Amino acid sequence: MDQYVIGVIVSNVSGVLSRVSGMFTRRGFNIDCLTVGETESSGFSRITVAFHGDDDIKERIVQQLQKLHDVREVEVLSRTETVVRELLLIKIRNKADSRQDIMTAVEIFRSKIVDYSPTALICELTGETSKIDAFIELLKPYGIMEMCRTGIVAIERGDNCLKTVK
Image (cartoon, rainbow, N blue to C red; front, side, top):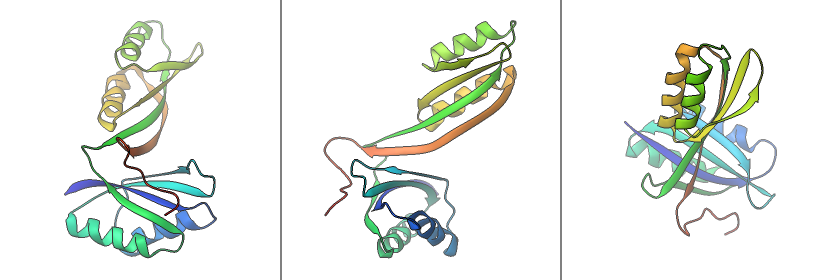
């Protein structure tokens, strides 16, 4: 099964996210990742949904999303023509014997330390999911205390755009 990423422009009103996620639930489709944020126009939000399936499932999801009230546009984003990023905040134990190794990992991954205390370091990293996963694996031996991930956001390259107004 392939992973698909869909961009959805919706009205920025109460209940839209519930209707979109409910459509997946009612039809037995699993959401791998879902992110939502206001667009350049405050009246609209952009939902990015990632899920696994085949072409038939993808087409059914697109058709069902297009039927929902307050959905303005739905587009399957091309893997080769889309920039995909994720944000990670990760808190690691700050110990004198491992601090330099952690700092080296932060530098190699182009991460940054956003909070420093005698007992913990908080690092921020953005990138593709595989980069985030590799960073987490590298830091596990040093004691991950806590972490949170945004899920992916995606936007097409060039002048291809999901429009907020048709």
